[in-house]
Length: 112
Length: 115
Image (cartoon, rainbow over all chains, first blue to last red; front, side, top):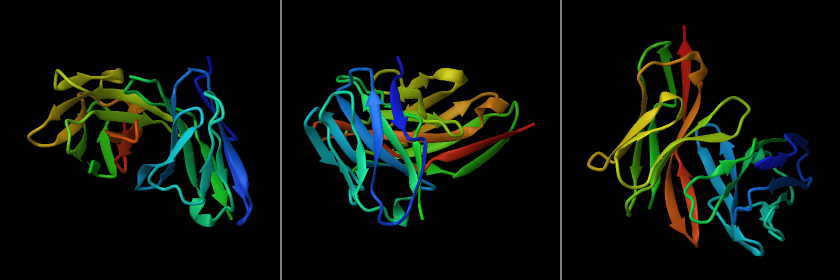
C-alpha cells in the first residue's frame, strides 16, 4: 500500500519545454488535487478532481493542464515551462466523506 | 472568503521549551481547521484537526491545538520541544466549493529547535 506516489522527485526543464508530473494513488480516493509550494506562500491549489472525468481549476491554474481518466491517476501537464513555475509540486488525495488529505512526497521542479 | 494567517515565518526554541505556533483564520462558515507538518524533503503529514465538538484537540507527537471562536484562532502548542520537532508547520482551513473540500493554507512557520 504505497499511498500517493509522485514521479519524478526532481526535474530540471528549460524554458519552453513541456512535461508531465505523475501522481498515482492506491487508496481508491475520489478526490485528487495538485498544489504548488513556494517560500512564504504556503501551498496553493492548481487543479483538482472530484472523480474520473471531472476536473476543475484551483487558485493558480494558468500554465497547467490536468485530466482524470482513472480513479488512480491524476497527471499534471506543464505546456510550456516558465521560470515562474519553479516550485515544489504536491499531489493530494481525500476520500469521500473524509476531512483528511494525504500528500505525496513532492516533485521539485526547476525551470531555467 | 476563507483565509489563514500564521504569525511568524520562523520560530526558534530551546529543547525542552514550550512550542507555540500561531494561526488565525477567517471563515464565513463554522470552520474545519488543520495543522500539517512537513519534515525536510517530505510531503505534508496531518498533525491534528478540528471539525466539531471539543475545542481542545490532541494530535500526534504530543502536539495539541485549541479552537477559540471568539479569537478566530487555532494555535498549536507542545509543552516540551524535542529536536525531532524541527520542521515546517502549516495551518489550513477547509473551503467547500465546487463539490470539493479545498484546503486553504497559511504561509507556514519553520520551527527550529536548538540544544
